[in-house]
Image 1 (cartoon, rainbow, N blue to C red):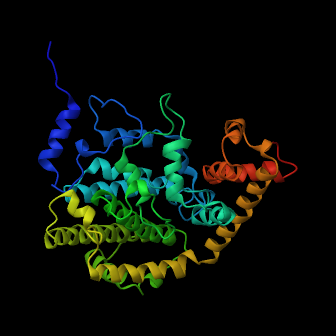
Image 2 (tube, rainbow, N blue to C red):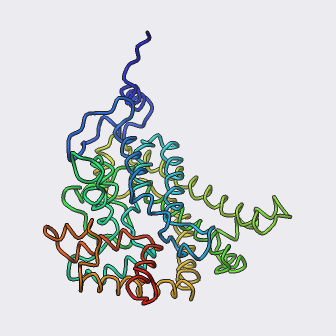
Image 3 (cartoon, rainbow, N blue to C red):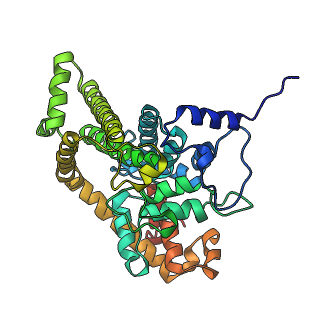
Length: 387
């Protein structure tokens, strides 16, 4: 009978041979909060990825808003499809830069688990409600989800993810970020795997918000032609394909935009690594700035694109209506649960003896999908709805 060695060790040996010297190797992991034996055929970061995918919070992303509330249409991005797209872009970049693809994928898959229903409007609403109780921020909530709120294992709370994935959660850069806890050494720069996910997220939501904006008629292509980057790509596409259907043209333009952004990021990051003579992980940690970045030219082009999206899409009257609707659903729900906590389900209510009521209600609402929040609102406030 044939015998086989430990596949995990083979995979770890392959990482040592193939990955860049400054990439995170699975053997380098600082480990988990609660000790577990290594798996026979999966590395630490592969196990993290699998735990994230099988979590309840990950499945809920299917019915959480990216830009358009899920019932607005079946073809718009949800928080789940956005997350999958970020993971795909992250894997591509990590592979090209010889970084740890499994770690980058795990960080990408986990980065939005703490998002509220109704997108950033939901986050802003909970942050306002919780302003005297520490506020609300989705990175911190994501860490609560994976460290505490997921209940799957008998030996520890949460998912017991590795330090590197948990660090990737807290050092994921967004405009809503709060100070990084001391546990994650805020003075140290994030791993390159974490840094690339930050920008893969930016690439995904810029490009796919444009796609959804055009599909919904919130954006018009003639308006996008004001944007230098889009205009240049559009002219080049027209030279190559003169007779495309509107759907094909939109798809090809978004595809080309993603390729442009990813290619620029990879080449610029290679240049910066060489310029600053990045050799080891410590060089990454001690760098005064992020190593993974766009070129200066692309940064300027993206800045113009970002401003356009903010002015023409995120401030569009339909988006404002959806944001206002989110506030008018989440705020009364919170107030109703606060007034009478017996309206919370038993699975949450039993935690009241050990936890702050405000935080408990915040956890409950943050975990809701758009669909569930709407159903709860009807049950609590519509006298003709069955409870």
